Length: 454
Image (tube, rainbow, N blue to C red; front, side, top):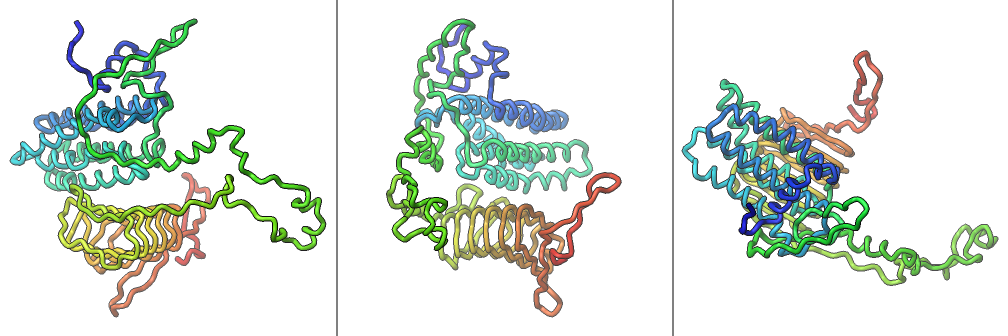
């Protein structure tokens, strides 16, 4: 019996999958990995741990499963079709957005629950599923949300350390989001990758019968008057793709190299070892002047639990005076600026910044520097972890209370740790950049070399 009600695009995809039992075999490798690894392994482990604990924890986990299934159906559509218009795009995100809201409302209605920290750990981090709307760095968004949730899951680890199953539940949830971040880094590093077929309303592409042409696309579904939120996704590759799509005409703007410009045919060039002044290369392939660099407007705002500080240039007096322990700070695209943060918060991310300095009191989780250059940080209180990835030049001033910090670095150079001394001065210790690896009895043995300054 067919329902006469309206179906969302994701529900239509579910119908297609049910009607074609082998549809999953035809999906993109990224969707298959999301289904088989993220949902089938990591999330399954979390669901199993939640079922063992039962009660509200299990009910909440069922809503989480619903949210991940909604995202899977969205990814199926995105991997097949080109990005649709904003209205249809919002429709496609509706089920995931509703699932996230349902998870958070479940927590809000149970503030007196003995498992409130369990519910909060998931509710604070489930917005990680909004990574599909983030560009150009969706991976760090997932980490920010995971860090926000760990404020509560760490409480679970502390308060329920003597009760079996709770530590496994907490580790499984944190591990699920960590796996999601790794998945994004592998397939969607700079933003969600869409398919190529024109969007036809949400259904999967029709399967081609043997010996016959493909079936015509189904009619578009009825429109929904829903607003998931403003979407601001910038695809910087569009101009490049447009030029490549010219085919053979892509070289039409290039200047022809004549015999008198070739060194092996013009002895005068060989003698002077320079190109004559009248031979000038075109600034661009089309002969036009290069476009001026686009400067984006600065941003400094608290969005939910996240302080967003973007595109600040030459600002030396940025301050965040009021913070909470479950908040995070995300700085992106800042240059020649300084920010001071009061109070204790969860985590900080410095992404794609140049000559940026940050002074903060204490963190629950970590501070991360990624794709940045010539930066400085100073901690006045405590910080458990400093994570550094693809950074060239970073000075880290520690306090006497933060000497137990763990520093994890990769693909970085010119890293220096400033350690306070009894005299009040700082001793400068470089982080090793050069390593020596030998074959040991049980595998590789790697040590820092003396030339690295250790």
